Picture 1 (cartoon, rainbow, N blue to C red):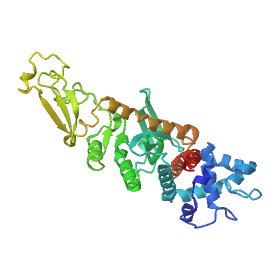
Picture 2: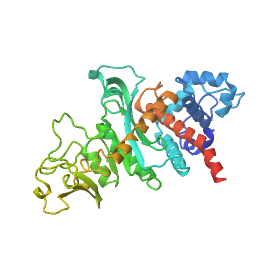
Picture 3: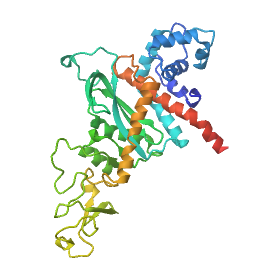
Picture 4: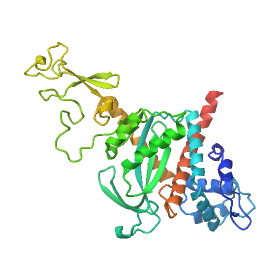
Length: 381
């Protein structure tokens, strides 16, 4: 069912054919199916895959190999993975085509995107920090807090992913050394989405945790992509909120009370006097700030500071509901790691690690399409 959703002919046709894979040569489409089956079956080592192909005729036939013929050796698969790592664009094309297909089937919505990073342990042996080669191609040490607030250290890589929150499917992924800051990769992922899928996907909201709370991310998402970043404010050890604002970036009146939110108005969010709105009993009354019975009104343009002023307003019910969708990316990582072998990295180098990551993501999207496509076909019929 999964293989039926994939068109591997164009991808394999684009690979460099410097030599045959094996003494008599093996079909590259079949080898690519076998590598995808390796992810679907959660097989860790290529050696185990080779043994499975030899011992299981049904598995061998499903991957496309003739039942009575020889199957590729471990060395042959190793050379093929090297070829794939030198042509990563081919696997990117498969993932892109699957995302387009999933969008056409209404599996992917594309309006709400969650972005996060997750750790990947390296197959390379850990080395001291003093011996790490900082060239972006070698693994290094990373550190971050887990969901329980515990500090976790590891040697290896990070996978950065942008996930559609409706389908919980990855639509853009990247791999970096473990020490790379999460926030650095947010805008490249968003650019990738807009370059690849601008005709079919137009995200309105990008949900991220407070590790992405940087002015530049808010500004670029607002100005360049006409969308809204939903990110909690990182206090960074501050003992007081920004001047003139509460911790949720609500303006304070002259008496120090949080003003009352009063809606969105043409790129600005509007606040009114809390005394006039009956939220507080100000000893000075509403006349202290404004002679109008309507009370004092403050408008904050989102474009002036997209980090402080958002729509929906920070910590509002709608804002919290949107932010809660961020957990979709965590569930995506869990499925990739627990069910599709993302954690079972048995290759060295960032290029081959990217092949491993892309195969896991392709397996997840293709599997989701395989399960949902018959339902859509029945509806169409």
